Structure formats: C-alpha cells, structure tokens
Image (cartoon, rainbow over all chains, first blue to last red; front, side):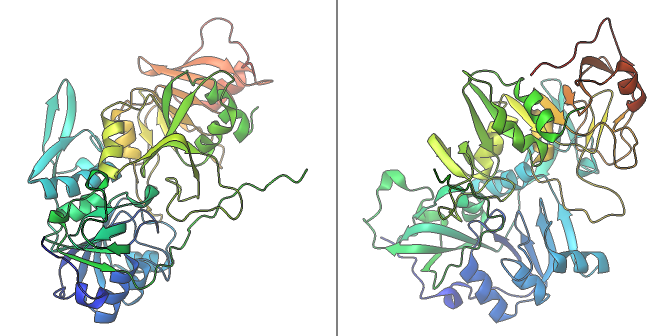
Length: 235
Length: 217
C-alpha cells in the first residue's frame, strides 16, 4: 500500500508558489477545502490563478484569499454575493474568466482523463464562443474547449483512508472528484481519516491514485450560505 | 393577471408523469409547490442531486445538502448524489425532460438573455448556458415587461445572449406563449387579461389565432 498521509494542512500545501494555477473544489461554500485555504492564506502565496466554481463569500472560503489579495485571476461560473470580489474586479486588480458550469466541470474531468480538448454545445452563439473553433455535429454547432492544467488541486472529502481513497457526502461532492483527477498534485482534506481496509472498496468515489496528499482537517466550520427551513406545525 | 405563484402554478401544468425536471432560481423554484395530483416527477439540481426534496425542518439543516441556489434542502427516498460532470452529462445528454428558468429577455426565435447586463456587476452564467444549449423542453418563467414597463418579449435580444433559438414556451403574468417559426404564438391569457393588453406588452412578433382561452387552474 502506498501511503499518502501528511501531517496537516501546512505540510499538505508545501510547494505552492507565487503565480501558480490551482483548483479548489466546492459549490458555494459546500464541500470547500477550508483547511487548505487557511494554510495558503498563512503562507501568503501571491498571484494565484484559481479555478473554482465560485469565489467564496466575504470572510469565508476563497473570500479569505481575496481579502489578502493573493488571487490574481479567478476562473469560475458564478461569483455573486461577494463585495471584496466585486471591488477588486471593478478596480481591475482581479482578472475574471467566467465560463459555463458544465464546461468548467468537463474541463476538469478532461484534464484528469488525458483528453486535451472537447466540443460542447454550451455557449455557442454567445460571447463565451468568441475566438473558439466551431464544428457541426449531428446538425448542431459546438465549440472547442480545452482541458485545464493546474499545479495543485485542493479538494475536500467526507472520509478518506491512508491510501488516498475518498468518499464524499451529499452535494459536497460537486467539483471535488473532478478536480482530484485534474490536479498535478492533489491535496485532499477529510473529516475522517481511517486506516487502509476500513473503507469498502465498492464505495470509493475517487481511487487513491488521484490523490498525492491526504490529511484530517483540524476544523470544519461548514458554513451555510442560505439557511432555508420549514417550520414544524404545532397542533 | 398572475402573481409569481400563479406563473409557477401554470408552469406546473406542463409537468408530465415520470419527468425529470431542472428548476432555476426564483419563480421556477416555486413550481415544485404545485405538482398536479397523480403526477410523479423528480427534481434535479445541477450542483449534484436527483430527487431533491423540500427545505429541512428547522434544526435539521445539513451544510452538505444544498441546491443550486445554495439553499439547504432535503433528499427524498430514491434520491442520488453525483459530481458536476455527471450532472451536466444528464443535462447535455438530454436525460432531463424539462428545464424551467428565468430570463431578462426572450426573442421571437427563442434566443434567451439572462446572465449579463453590460455596465453592471456580472455575476456569471452558472449552469444556464449548458442548460439552454441542450435541453429539448425549455420553459421561461418571467414577467412580461421589465421594471420600466418595456417588453421582455422582443424581435431580438439586446442583452448578451445565454443561448440561441432554444426557448419553446414562455409563461408570464399575462400569458402562455409558444415560440415557433420565428414568432410568439399566444396560447392562453391570464384570468382577466385581454388579448389587447398582451399585444401591447409584446414587442416581438405575436400571432393570435382564433379565440384565445383563459388559463384554467
């Protein structure tokens, strides 16, 4: 068995350097690698290009790296609900590349699967298609999109073992498995880290081959962005 | 004239038994409250769940269980979770039968603009471009006119597009309209709304054939 365990978030983020392109799993604040983000903030790494579906909120998630101006460019599908982001984008400090969510997911998947580019119908006829090759398949126009190339992928899983196998929970799965496949170095932080053999091989979502470093997150706040509930009827 | 719930209720009549459905944020979300009796549908949320249920009871919220609007939700019996590539595979691969989304503008040939207003903060398209590029059955839920009273049903969209020639039906507070052959075809009027009113509020080409029935609820 090849072990992937590193001691903590600090050790897991070793080697990240200024100007790198890095991926962060999560959708909104759901399933984000909180501990790795905190460690990168502590390291003060600058000029990062970040690939992540969203850019966190003020004071949480990638919002923490925006606050310290560590991000040069964001590649995302949706970036609302973040005042610091808006400020830096309007002032021109922060570059932003907005791409369709399904294309973002597929560009991650392609990167991990050795597919350099693919055609998708999403964005044809819009400004997303500008400058991109168009081909007709089955009578319908598609645009050429390329796989990402990221030095690091930071993902968050529910359970993991020392071999780097990962299991996700609920909708916290989202982009995490795809980015785990895509990163040249994939760092997984997990809520529960167990010995090899403790997880049922039938239930593994991401095999350890895609994970270079795994650690148990010290703390997970798991902040909820929109708390929506039903009130219990009192009869 | 309908309110937002009325629009959602009318769209719910478009649901058919055994449909998998993706609902966008805003009015489309309300459609889930009006599923007709005897019809079984499953809701997909593109962040990675099929079989999405209602909001959780207070105190039972789970940070790992949200919808595409980032709201806490529940999973119904038979639900499943999956990653974002598989989710958009369901969408682009046309496994989802019906998509309901909001719009800023719709044109008479079915183009839709709903993600960007030049000069304003651009938040992004999220999954909207993937949804409209592939879904066969796209219904737009929106108000007939904008806040300045200008028609949102146009000969051509003026805002940056989300997708081309993809919208099949539009349901507004005034009417149900089908888009075909480069025109809006008036199918139904909202209760108490006249054909003249709808004509005046529609800037795009509008075809009115015969007696236009009132919506039934």
